[in-house]
Length: 117
Image 1 (spheres, rainbow, N blue to C red):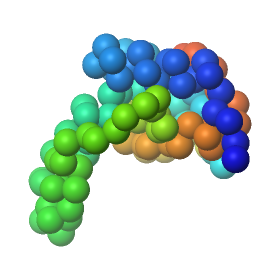
Image 2 (image 1 turned 45 degrees about the horizontal axis):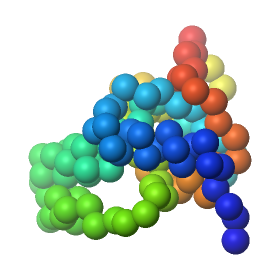
Image 3 (image 1 turned 180 degrees about the vertical axis):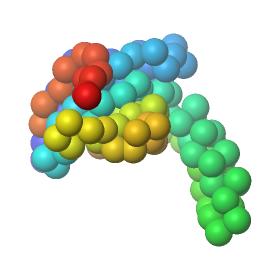
């Protein structure tokens, strides 16, 4: 079993406890580089549910994300919003997306987000 980095767990816990979405982070996970701002899980879920509700084909899945967060103990995932996967000189998607990353799968990270041209 992989033991997650205590620093990144502490960062995630502070984001969760403060309900803040101003912490920018860049992580490497599964060979992908994801950069963006962290959000508390409840805020992230609410935003995903809103997007799904607006979709004719996916609206039925919104209730999965509308459910209250039932978690005890330290955070196990990072919840990114306004995030991009860095690929070459571009970020995908250009407008930013919503990503959930298991902390135990993060192989490297840095505070801040990367710009690209």
